[in-house]
Image (cartoon, rainbow, N blue to C red; front, side, top):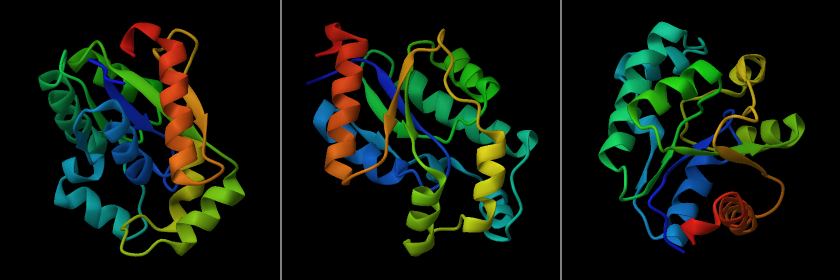
Length: 172
């Protein structure tokens, strides 16, 4: 399966964006970009200290991801980005109108458990509540699909491919 779409893998911290994104990109035959790599150092320092980012912090980050997605328009790609608020997704769509979202969703307890077992990541489990408080799920008029994160990464990626195919059969 190949897609000309740029797919944004979104969701709260701990849903597996960094794990599922590359698997999804491989299945779609397109490049993957890690959204965390677009953060300025100040954002990473702030989150590492347990302080949630505000909208002003997220602006340059979203613009950098939007620029990458714009450059991949018509070529396809997968990028991870929490994209928790509608306004963030609108900002990404303004830069790259054809983006499609894969919203990784799941039970809070499962996500917290996964976060507590990962190593080497700057986002502490303590910020999970702020992530859920900020989350505005995809709305009916937004191009995208929701995919449950229960199960093994390969199963989740396969569910995402299937959901994208059902969403846009022309992309297969």
